[in-house]
Image 1 (cartoon, helix red, strand yellow):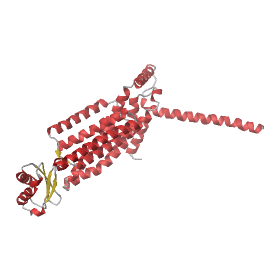
Image 2: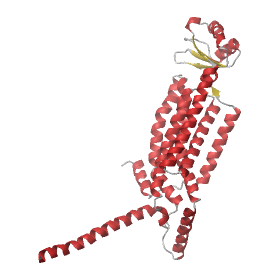
Image 3: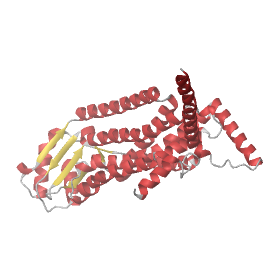
Image 4: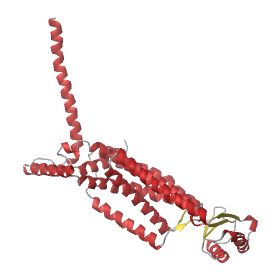
Length: 368
């Protein structure tokens, strides 16, 4: 077994672990700081919306020796608006101009052909009207809202409303960070970006549900014992799935990183940036939120319940009494293993009883 696999097995058995839930205030502070930075970036720089949302024109040119900065100057001079220019893999240019009258596209195309020194018929123009852009934006918002509502309903039915609320907060956290990074980096927002956001929200939900399933199982009958609090049980469940969450996240990030850094950066396929950046940032934020945000929030919500508060008092009282007597009760995280051992002892005891009754039946048969 590899070292990582051995570590995962020890985490699952509770032999080692990190107190994620106990140090939740640190993670809350880090998340608040990152979220505020993302919101400030969004407020100051704003999002660069693609022509699919604002309307405009995209001109694709053949191979040219004109630099990106020169092309931006030519496009602004021809249209009267700022332009976004990207260098393509074939050394051509992709010139995007938003908020222009599509009726002037032929005039802009002619001016660009003259400045770039390429034939006008070799320049491809794609036009998008502003009304179609508004329709796409409305559909994107509708899809996002419907997704959130369905997530809350599913989690409330499958688990409970506290877990649904924690998952919703984690999803909003991931969405805010991803959108903030888009604003800070300056990548344009396209329908591909929206698809990427919906994809990473689903992936974040997957990680969260895996941990919540462990919480649901561990929470059964927890108030009937006095060895472990709900927060400690939640932390044990989180440690049990930690290595699997890290492995799946790393495996998912590798191909996305290839799309972002090689496809978009080295090869110059700028359209890959639209979806790959949202996937890359969202996957990382989703893994972070499922570990550091969602589970600690559930523990906070549950610890406010009267029965969980009473359980915590009983557990602490028992530990204080054990400490006063000098007894060893410093391993609350081993409560699940102890319960398993008790169950095995009960099964063994039942087997022994059965064996003891068996000879009596045989003796009665012999007497007959």
